[in-house]
Image (cartoon, rainbow, N blue to C red; front, side, top):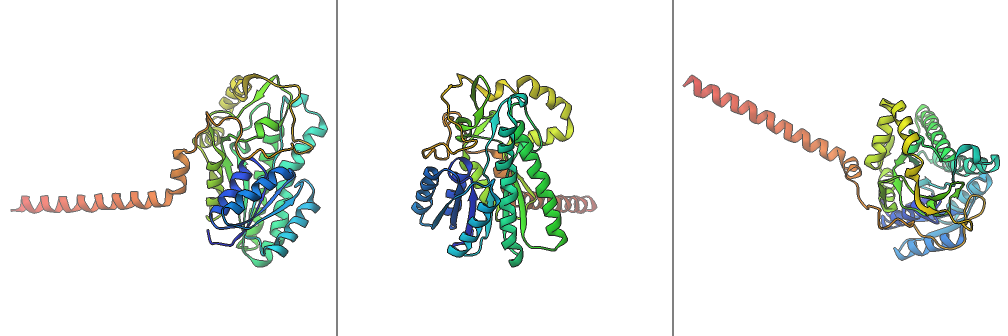
Length: 339
């Protein structure tokens, strides 16, 4: 990435947003950090500045469009034009749908879905006038394949995908050079599973296999410099998305059978557990959750995805060489017969 670019990351105080802020700083960008949790934001500021880049902390509830617009305005006043905007902020409720109150469902939707809408609006208001910029929507395989106990999150991610497709068409119609992409992630080891509101008996967990948030961050930074419509991250995400296209009825039954147990550990849920649905949880929780011992840092699918053009060129070169060698062999063989 070109140095001194200005990147805005929502949900930057923890989890994938925190790892993404670090990854952009490592790539040479100045990073604007938006989230509600002030402790986590200050931790993210230290991360970015330790990498030699400028960090601007703006406590923001992305569900409030006015706050997001004010953050975008302040960003451009203090750091300059926004080059990349990453919509990552989310909250959720782990629960059977009928145990979720209307207020809880609305809040999860307001932050996860409307927060993305608000961020996209604020970014486009500035990028369209300059005819440049990139917006990265942090999505999920659950934007294609829903699972039980996560109706608010799945509904929001489906909505983000539909919203993104609609806006992308409008940008194409206007011949805008602003690029809109969506990164569909698999399961990651983040604090979400420690502070997401839960109405279940046992502690929530990501559906294995689990990966470290730095892998997601690498994909997001890479996607910001490409012209891909979508980037799928993790073999399990690819399997879920393609499986939904081919045998959705089979995945329905599979999710009904293992979707509950696969999302819970054997540990009982503490009655004193804090959650961040309506208010941030105090403290700096970093990028990682409690699954470091089980989480992987690398997946072959992402590496192949990020280098697919080079691999295709290499495969074409090998095929061309084999074809030419075959022609030469046939010609030499024909000459020998003629002799």
